[in-house]
Image (cartoon, helix red, strand yellow):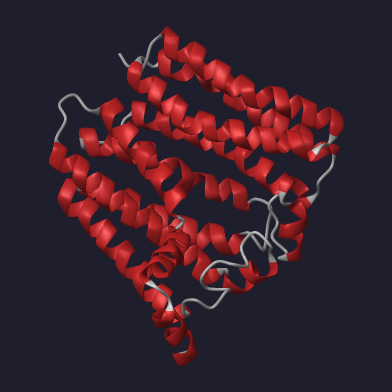
Length: 295
């Protein structure tokens, strides 16, 4: 362990920053925090900048903690995959103990900030996100293909957390935001799993339906995109947003459905990549249009 510490100490400041950015998955964490902020603006009537600040800080700490704990638990798995073998833990730029202490402290502080800086319900949602993502979803990936279903729950919490931070309570509207992001998880993660199937198999991670890359799996991916498409009317139906948002949501979901149809026909990885890229567009754009066209 002393050798690992020496290696960390030997890194220049920029190298340390990059290592921590990889440990916390800074880009992904930023997307998650943004979705929570958009959820806040969708739900808020009068902006409280103190609450918004605590949401951003607490949300960042919660998400970074979850991502870091995920890497702590998957250090040996990450060594086996080309995509992850250069992360700071498998590459031994950082020790397990060091990463564990930092991630646990960030999680505790994040929950504390959401609970006492905003409201207890926000703190509970933050704690649930960490426990379900790092404590349940992460180990399940090696056991069952249903891990994606479990992982969809913490993945859908951020916009709901933003709404709860804005209003102080859970409501049907918060549930709709949760539902849309929950449905989004399936075509998104299954498209990634299709593209990275060989890598996942090396690590014995069960991410695709039935753990197989075949026609049946591609049909399930298409069906998941169609379910998301069919849910596009929900915000307008429950008076969260207007017609412009509904049309936009249908278009955004259709951009995932079309390559999914191609994937069923061809089984070509490039269409899984297109689904994945369109899912990133959907993630931010869907919440943005709900904010722009909110009732």
